[in-house]
Image (tube, rainbow, N blue to C red; front, side, top):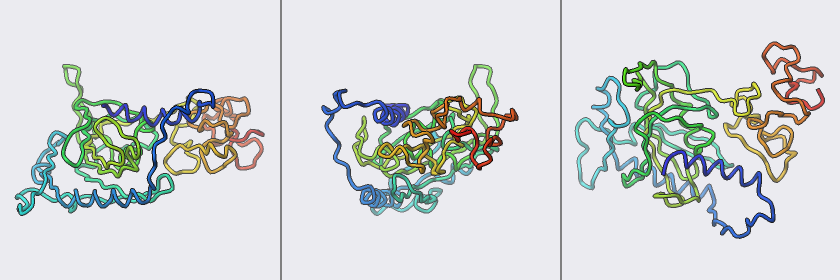
Length: 310
């Protein structure tokens, strides 16, 4: 399994809702019995707390390295009756708690921040990133990894990535090596510990049972600003309700609290005519200053690209 398949699962869910019809054979799919998200979060948090209290990492070694990477992070189980080894720290003593709302549920995840990253930029939840990573379960088994830098679109990954990576900076600089590889300096480095509701939740996948908290070591190298629909508006600015997700209320396409201005079931970040007026968003720059936010022909406080009556 690769992290890219995580994204395909999420993207597939969107496409399925958008394209399914009654006669497409969808009735043959066995429905998944969903657990209550709040109850599952409480159970997951208990499991995460138990893991963090019972495992330690090589803190002294990492602090002494000039440019540590994910290969240098060693997490070990504290066996019953064992004394914490010198130069190591219990995870629970160094992790940061982050509380947030997702899917109408209050979630808590944990972050071990080993290096903030020396670059000036941080990715938004809608950006592309270049990173390396290693996904592992509580028993230490690795279910996925990429040793060499690989590019991903955060909108296509499980929610946990979008909630954690924006808290880190990219690398301070990089040096191109003669053999075609790149050496990154002062990268963002950490470990995220995620409840199942910010991971796969009810969807079992290869090596990961349903309702399983999962963990990732990661090293952030670069970020790339996305404009998914090429409409001139960076994708992160098309999050109309500001919740850090792109949502569409398929039950009520007139709902103005989601991210679909014209109610056509396509969120604005993927729609090159956001207001559905027949004019492409990128062509609604009336004063031709290159900034669509400055164009309000009707003087009603709504930029033209979001106003079908402009």
